[in-house]
Length: 173
Image (cartoon, rainbow, N blue to C red; front, side, top):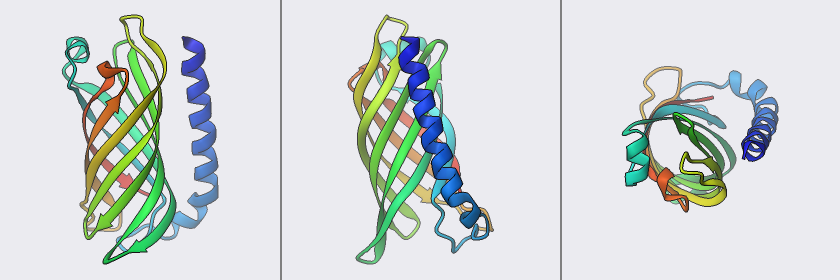
């Protein structure tokens, strides 16, 4: 059980480190309202929709990071693919979903949908790697030089205790 948790953390660390080192030097000089940042970091609250999840806690900590892989124009907006990693937990229960997502940006709104795998541990003895998915919407709140956003996401997990709705505030770099 701990092996899966640490393996997932190691894989996330390697992926995030590679993403950060390849784009951070270039992105630091372009942060601003008109920039096209590649990394998003967010923090928020997850509300479980399953009874077992709510019995653990009505509100769970959640944080996440996205790395924009490819951007392409579509109609009046733009679309891009991303790799998303989240971590949510309450007490000794946790999940780490890693998702490949497609994003469609129209003005200040971005619509998000993705599918992937998650590693998880639930106090009822359930653990392991499962399928998961996410759908959501982000709204750009940028008014100055730091690109900030609000986001709402539905997290789906085949380990139903981890399905829920997340609300976030984040920044793009």
